[in-house]
Length: 303
Image 1 (cartoon, rainbow, N blue to C red):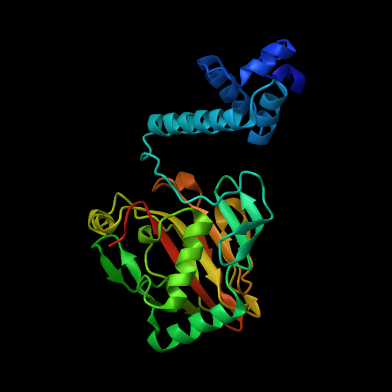
Image 2 (cartoon, rainbow, N blue to C red):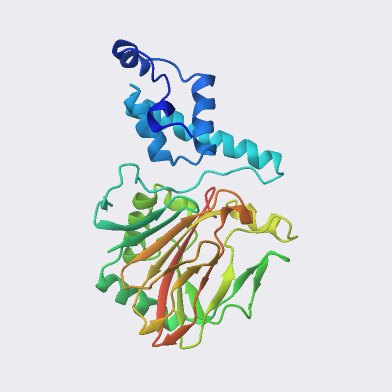
């Protein structure tokens, strides 16, 4: 394999030529080079650093890298007969910040994965907000239902042994404040989100691994997506810390997020397909109980 210095685009150019590279258009040759580096196993940060060393402006290089790789992935997906990619919510983490300012609250970034896109946030909700959500939801709890993709309605699912309820979007100052914070955090319009759902898991309760998008092959999906298109992102907020168990699992990538009060896990899926590797579940609660609040994001305004 060639050394990293040999991998630089235009690595034989002079200093003045390199300085002018940032003003050049992104050429087909550069796009091919980026794809070759990705296929050779070089991570995006390594490729970006090589482009910077070769004289490319960081913003130009980052844009070229993102667009080229996304176009390449879309082309591969099309060749494989996968559904078209959709825009997804995405927190501003390009500079690897330790924190994100959401206006009324500073949220910590605890973990960030690219494929699949999983981000764990700390301090998203205050203890008082967690307690207030539980108190407001508790009188309205009932056996949790799931979307029935065969009919477009709702149904009891044996894989989901919890109680739950939905808040209407913006139905109280508390809900409105949290929704505005989420919108800033994930760069996604409030109106493109479903109402906040609160779930309560007692000992032994769980939600077996599943996908949050609606399966295009199911007969009821066409009815479901009329209200706002596909689901494209999920945010699970932990309202308490169970004594044991209750983590959010991602079996395809062997990741489990421990439920800690005030923290949250976000993941997105740009197409309704298993290739997103967003299979996830709520592990059984072993001791104590678990309260969570879930926000699902749609591709369009949810009505």
